Length: 110
Image 1: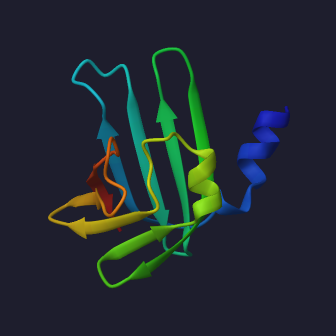
Image 2 (image 1 turned 135 degrees about the vertical axis):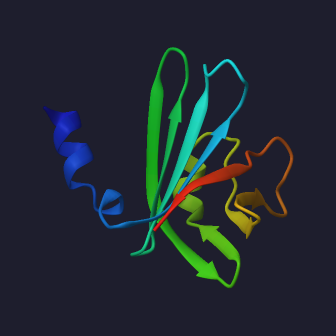
Image 3 (image 1 turned 45 degrees about the vertical axis):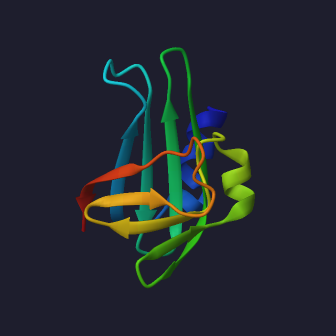
């Protein structure tokens, strides 16, 4: 019951989707990560592993072709997430802190 309440009423998971992007660590599908950017300035990162999943939400700012994710939310996410991404050629590419960080392929925009 708590999980249902938590997922339903968290403010950062509300709002119309703007970009849905996915990163797959490997081709066998055992690990995937979805970044959802909402039109209202909120984002969610869903990480799915073979044996568990996690979700982190926060706010972001858009500056031209750059997305800046809230640091406190990123610090709660998987270590492969960074705070600054460049939107380029259908991808979200990590900037500055790029070592072992995920690049996301945009799969849907609205």
